[in-house]
Length: 233
Image 1 (tube, helix red, strand yellow):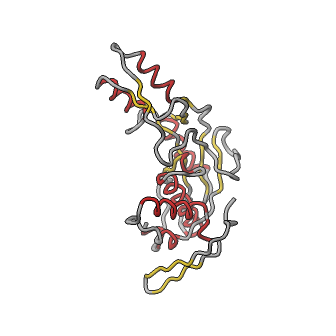
Image 2: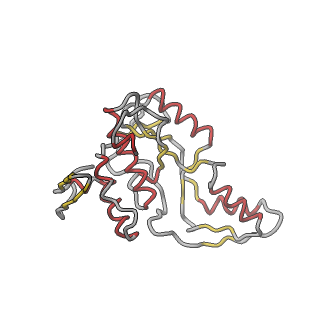
Image 3: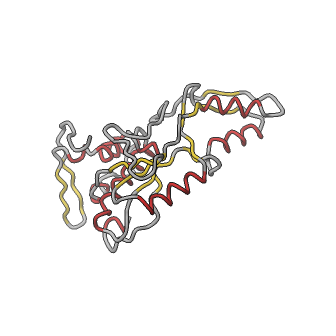
């Protein structure tokens, strides 16, 4: 955050984003989208190339669905799936590493790089195959989608192009810049619903529609006019 707000900006490894940043609907998605936009803001001001990479679900990583299912099977079940029809995109650890390397080699300032991960996978199918491999019966329990959770993820947000100028499997998505001072209006101690709404406005650029940001002795006041967004897309 200090690099984004002030001081010398030196290009770090590309920030790891997620497909949930495309048309976000959850706190994680909004936060990752905002991080992409903050990175785009630093891009013309820093030394080096500033861009993001969007990951799907990385197989074998900590917290991956396969690891969770294995743990649940080892405990005798049940395997918990949110919805029978929920789908997700998957990539291997090697593909994730390659995407980061490609970002450093071929990415441009302010972009988000997205890997073509093929067709999305039904999580229920994964759960049933893993259950069938168990040496004892394992039940599958459907828990329902959590607030903000999508049935199907997308790789590109509304209005984002799928352009592949360098590698046939890597898309270069332009990301609009977000002034870091705007993020300070999001108070993490707010009620969840209020914070989520504010993050949604920031990630979608709605804070720019008739809004005026006043900086005075480190105090930030925000005057929002309730009008449709024309800032993005």
